Amino acid sequence: MNTGEKLLTTKEVANKLGVVKATVYKYIKEKKIKPVYEDNWRIDTTLLFREEEVDQLIDKNKKPGLTTGDVAKKLNIHQTTVTKYISEGKLRATKKKYKGREVYFIEEEDFISFSENNTFERYKSKDFHTPDGQFHLFQSFRNNLDVMARIMAINKEGKALTSEGNELKLQDLSRNGFESKYEVSKKDHLTKRGYAAFRFPKPHDLDSSIYRLIERFYQTIGPKNMRLSVNDFINLEVKPTLLIDVTEDELKILQSNIIEGNISTRHNGIYIDSDLESHLVHLPKNIKEDLRKEAAVKNMTLEEYTLQIIKNRMVD
Image 1 (tube, rainbow, N blue to C red):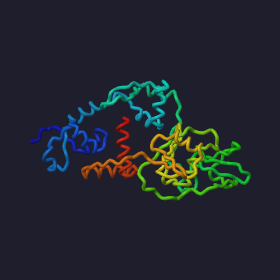
Image 2: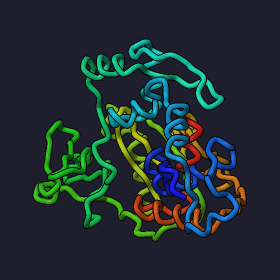
Image 3: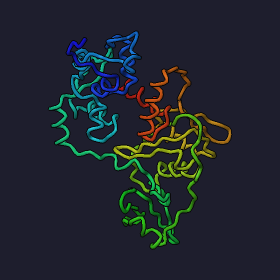
Image 4: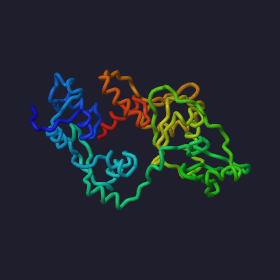
């Protein structure tokens, strides 16, 4: 019997809601949406849902404005920077209850006005080294006169600044006698779980301890075990590692700028660790496969992608 009502598959519902299929199953468990045939759905090889009920859920879940996460994505800046603008009164926002939590929301008109009247230093690139691995962001070089140059941008031709105030393209470093005084580690991906995250202010001094700390990580764990990006801050993530012979100044900088993870002192240095704790979750095979495919598209491990989903859910 054809009732004329339109039925949607699980995949179609996920696309319509703008979520992953795992979220659709979560909505079913929370009784926010109900399949047409719960008991014998395998006849259709997929759960089926009434489009009218899906539309009702969309209206119910509709955000009353833009979240700080939405604004951060639109402006390509860090979410904490958006929160900072709100606390400073530069961006108008109102706290509203959404999905059981108090969340900051920004009206579209306020966002447009804010974005048109302010300039932002955005993420320039997720890549912090050249494809051939020869040059790395914030890597330092010196010539035979002990003049220092530091790489400040990795883009088309790159940019290095010297302690004398000159600007050089990356290809011109060796031509002007500049050489790196250390070897960047080629260490493969570490299997230790998670990352410790740091957010550093941008130094004005080319020989800042912050830049030298980043270079220490280049030498100890290597770029494959690091994530580095720049916006209003320098954002660094590192795999768990032991740093040997750390000065008091370096320890103070790391302790005051860590935002995820923890630092413990050892007899021979400091151990930087992630703050991940194990939590075993059993998933239906089809959900796990969907997550694995989506993680592969984003060039992430299943664990990293799942953690990202959870973090985004907690923020938004």
